[in-house]
Length: 302
Image (cartoon, rainbow, N blue to C red; front, side):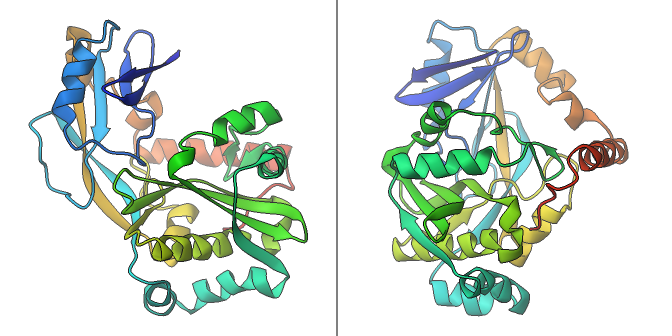
């Protein structure tokens, strides 16, 4: 169960039935300068919320508030100029990968949000049902749903497309924070059938170029690691492209007795996050093997 509401001019998403947890709808892309005001607003909003969670704003990485915390992380690329990233922050292999798309005739450029872009994104989303060893959540969406999803935060978004001729084969949606000094990769998806062109690498390169041109000093590629899973092919890809793991506080603010009990018992985490990592790793391997047998042609290269 998910509910979207506005509190203190912020879009808040509430999920859960027994435990109702709230967070910013634009979490990892927008941050709070004064969380105390929003916490008070949530208490008075008239909707039951048991627990509110938020991440601390970069560049501060030491604890600033007295709320209960757990340590979270982000994959962060510091940006000064494109040339510095190209010559000093990535290695020879990453540069070759980024140039591969151009050598094969792929054109990477910023694009406006319009019907042609939405149509191309819809085709990319519906190419295959499995990505990175798990079911792809955007597979099966119709063009109206894709339009609604991608039309969020348009006033602070930058879209980059990868084209083979006139056909979109990959795209990026960057969302800038309120200060326009940080941007997050909300979407970065390329067609699996064009994996030989290293399209995703070229999209990363253009994202860095677009950020540097706007004076954006940090590019965030979601989490560096998830739960107890410390390394993966995706985290290796991020590291090769200059992203660093930055640990930051994630705060949990219990607003009801249920929220306090859930926090103390660890029930604010998903069941899979409470599994020992060796068990979770075996389950991921089984899931990936099952998908490989069911969909043998959809493995991605990153």
